[in-house]
Image (tube, rainbow, N blue to C red; front, top):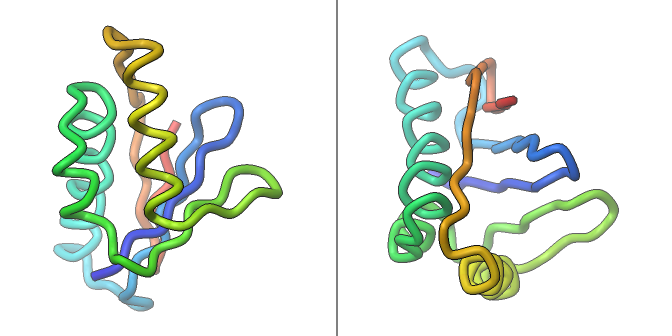
Length: 103
């Protein structure tokens, strides 16, 4: 499974997943993967989880900028160093087709 994600200025994440017409059980699994990105990797600083859930060829999209996995991981490390106590709060996850979005 591949996860592609991008951060927008309001903290919106769009994660494109490899299955196009996913059954409901897969949609729940996809939401759990995205939840893991925010709760474990970004909020707890467990960047090993960041690497576990991303495909080596994934591309992160932030506005008009695209970043490789290595560039995105480096950015996550820098954010964690600058804000070691930062935590991501997600109010809602919605999955449909090959997308998981959150606010």
